Length: 116
Length: 110
Image (cartoon, rainbow over all chains, first blue to last red; front, side, top):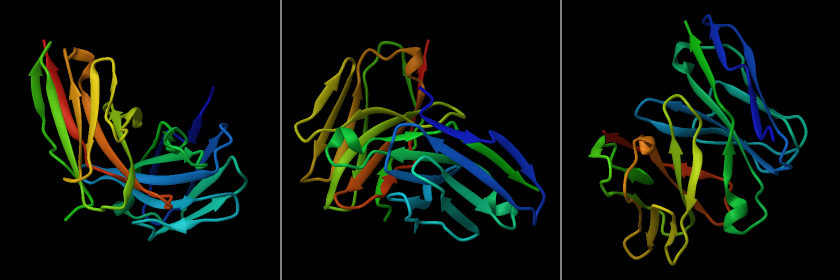
């Protein structure tokens, strides 16, 4: 079972470059999420998609855009990368149909991004 | 005040010791509670959900105290492999958002 798959695993960008982080899940989950994790800050929500066709801002959306391409895929785009966006990015998904067991988030392995 | 607060540690304990972590949350409407484990440079993985009556999974016991708004994680008979960061996670009913604590680092020493 693949679960949540993120690509790429590592990326180095120059300031001003753009890139898209890809995320796909094969668990038929409704909700998908993008987080960033920085030392001492914990996981912070960038954007989320409650269901196919909807996206909403999280805690730190500035400098990012997202696309929920279909139920499986949720991409994160940096239009003009800045050094402040150097971080580890995690994608997650959740079934979201009620009940504690179905509210569990499953994470991808992460993308380590450095912006020089 | 942060919505979810944890002692960052590190907690350094010898093998076989019992160790407990607490996590406090500020939103009284919170409904779902979890403990996740994160190894260095890896993704968070669910350790256990926290049920209202408390629950146990092997050497791990989770408790919820709604009146004082905290959850706890107890690890008995610590193993070297328990060394990791433990994340407290809280969610409110009717929202799609999870709030993560910054994590508590545990180091189990031989």
